[in-house]
Length: 115
Image 1 (cartoon, rainbow, N blue to C red):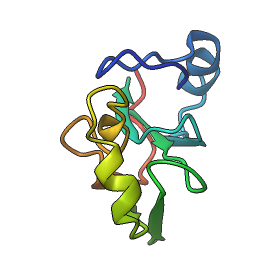
Image 2 (tube, one colour):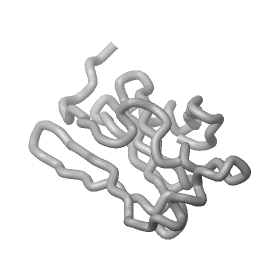
Image 3 (cartoon, one colour):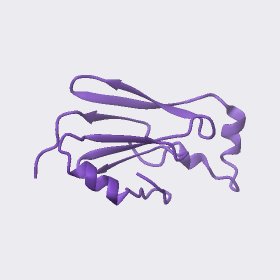
Image 4 (cartoon, one colour):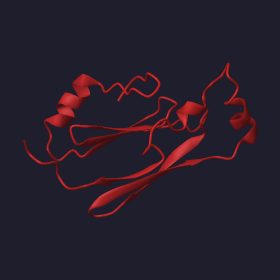
């Protein structure tokens, strides 16, 4: 994934074409663009990791099992920075979570169905 338009993810078409052609690819993880997002494209879960060193000071904890990967986003405590992110001129609070499923989820590790 690359780019962001406040809730509308932009999947890199060239990269997604390569991933689409590989039936065993069920997820792609990348970072960081300073925001946290999870999107699905043709059965591939695309996970965009947030920034750790700067806002939103968050990281994704992944647990991998034989049949699935589970994740959750955790944020470092920094009340001063968190308070500032809700100032309208900065408006960066959206970077932590924009959609349902951004903060925790599961990816089934079974190969995608062939089309």
